[in-house]
Amino acid sequence: MRKASVERATKETSVTATVNLDGSGAYDVSTGIGFLDHMLEQLARHSLIDITLRAKGDLHIDFHHTTEDTAIVLGEAVAKALGERRGITRYGAATIPMDETCTRVAVDVSNRPYLVWKVNFTRPKLGDMDTELFKEWFKAFAQHAGLTLHVETVYGENSHHIVESCYKGLARALRQAIEIDARQAGEVPSTKGVLGGSPAADAG
Image (tube, rainbow, N blue to C red; front, side):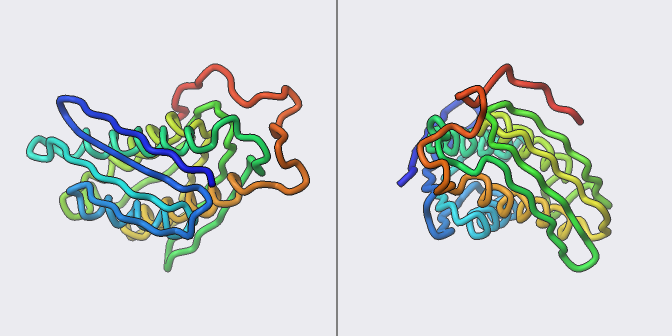
């Protein structure tokens, strides 16, 4: 099975994560941020990636460092578990309706990080969490997992539905992309024979 663990400790946070890409969607997550825990649980459940994650951060300042660092560590764990990315389907896409909201997510597990983020929220906060932090999470996760990731909320009004549809869309698209393709097992899904290149900057 494709499993990996990563630890990261700074003066701002301490984060550990373990993933099993060939899991059943089991999760055991604790970040100190209730809404972020809920989103990471959705990611695990709908991607079928088992995720165990523990984070302790400087929440007395704000949620930024903890949010970003959980994405960094989780992304690094996914990248480590993917290894050379041999045999994977590589591409995945999902359209997720959630009541009045509809979000589209497309992913290329290319090892060339890039984020296109076309998501607008109707509220500045969800509970105590700033909605602007969700872009930071997706950006850090894409960079450290090595994903070209496009996220677009086509329409929506409820900010909870908007962000949850983004995480569920990521989960379903990632589930497709990291599956082993029996027709090319052991092969790198690229005419170059290798996945990767110069990291790209965030596109917006």
